[in-house]
Image (cartoon, rainbow, N blue to C red):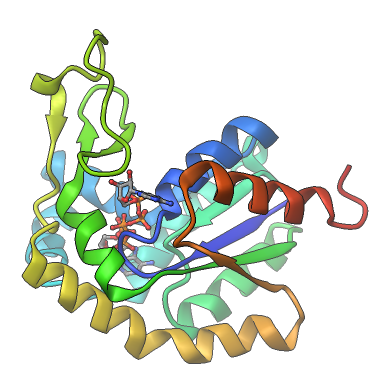
Amino acid sequence: MNIIIFGPPGAGKGTQSDFIIKKYNLFQLSTGEILRNEIKNKTDLGLKIASIMNSGLLVSDIEVGKLIEKFISKREFKNRFIFDGYPRNLSQAENLDFLLKKYGQKIDLVLKLKVSIDTIKKRIQGRSVCSICGKIYNEYFNPAPTKSDCCAPKFLQKRSDDTLEIAIKRFETYEKNIEPLLNFYKKIDLLKEVNGEASIPQINVEISDLIDGMEGWL
Ligand code: AP5
């Protein structure tokens, strides 16, 4: 089973992907995370893309396409993907389709988290990520445990693109590209919309119901 999860910045794609991979033994392919690692490791690509990511724009389709093929081609991940943050435009959707066919796979379900801009602003401003385990928290909605070795306050970090100004730019980039992408998946009847405004556990349940209801899955 391969799943795509869409949604604007801060919609909860990473949060829900973390839940889905554990429940269904899938592999989370987060292009944002992969690109942030390139920056952290100061690779040639990382040096090229840091300013793009911090201005809320998309990294080139060709560069991101090369990165995702490395994962899609691996046998151990075959038919176990949740694509978090890829595709982001029509050209990426066409490339994903091409790559999946090349490696004998397909998309089974496309989830779209629907969230308003006001919610996004609050979620992004409150977000922190544990630098040890990568778990995502939120000071308003989902605070980190106070008694934990791993996710202690000293290990929590803010993302450099989580300012209000960059978040608005990221939202505009999302809005500009999303319509043709949604139509692409509507035409092949894979798109399901999920209320991203609900609580994290409520969304867990809604997504589980959609996955469990997929024909031939269980
Ligand atoms: P990426 O890292 O993918 O960022 P994004 O799409 O902007 O999404 P976020 O990671 O901000 O949010 P999320 O939806 O995962 O929300 P989360 O679960 O963390 O991409 C970053 C950049 O990389 C892009 O801007 C671009 O430059 C580049 N890039 C990435 N992919 C690319 C591609 N394919 N092509 C080109 N460039 C690419 O939740 C947010 C917060 O809300 C958390 O604090 C969480 O605890 C909280 N929360 C989550 N759900 C709920 C809920 N239901 N109720 C209350 N709080 C909640």
